[in-house]
Length: 435
Image 1 (cartoon, one colour):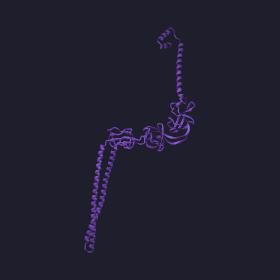
Image 2: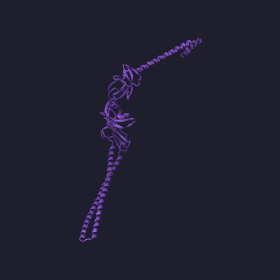
Image 3: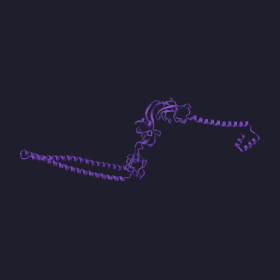
Image 4: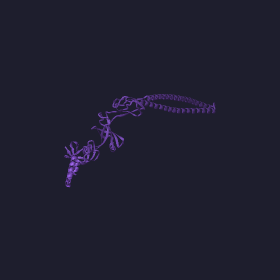
């Protein structure tokens, strides 16, 4: 072993060792002593490294800085039971403006972010085709009006002629009644004949039937012509409504703001084709906001209209109530809206994320701790409790919570100091507090 060690370090030494080996043979005892020496040296180095690593790990695991800990003392009090949800700010008033016809954009009068007044123009659409259709409809309505007047005059003339015929027939019938009476009188004094009386009676009956026929014809014609006239009136009324709708469409095609608001979107591509009903602009009141929230479907049955709500926006709390609940759920969550008591939030913008707490009851006189980032839902948690200069890990059962407090079901006593910041990276039963 000796000469191999020499060869490994230096060429000259190896030559010398070789000379020595050639001059003298190393004994077995010396070789064993050299081997033990090497083993002892390596073992000592290994033990030192191991002790160093253990000390470093021990220092890293067992000590924790006091200023990195957030403590809370267990006390007694009420816990307003709340459901945690997420949400985002949305304008109380928001309106989507759509294209009333198939056309294209020819002018743009505003841009996104502009604050506009009621009636202010936003866009101008191409109205040439729509204007032509409107003018054609105006002519059609006029023509239909003339036709209706013509029909009215024709009906009045026809019915007037029938009335005259009825009067003439009535006069002839009355004359025949008189003539019949005369013939009967002459026949009674012997100056007339029975045949003449019968002839006159027949003529009288004929005139009566003719009069009745004219009267029935008049009534039927009057009803039929009135019905025909009403049909034409209805057709004219429908055309007038279509004309009014076309006029309204033309007015809407000159896109104007229906309210004083801010523009959150506008199609500013001049010449772009837009389809009827497609979105061309969105306006919103950015001075007043509501919260559109989402809650897990498992808690949806606890959310009701009128429930008190606290929304935390950028670290500030705002009170409100649930004003609306969406009837359907999507992707395991249900939607709802919150009306804030103070909705004038000019310092914020739509889409800002918020934490939402929905109250649905109160638990009175219970042990409680401060709410922390570690809490997710009711259940058992491993929490560190302060004991002098040490932290002791304990199993603690927690119940309901609100945005301030968590109910302690078991595992802690009044006055215990509990670490409420996230300690998930530690799993030691004891931790030393490094002041």
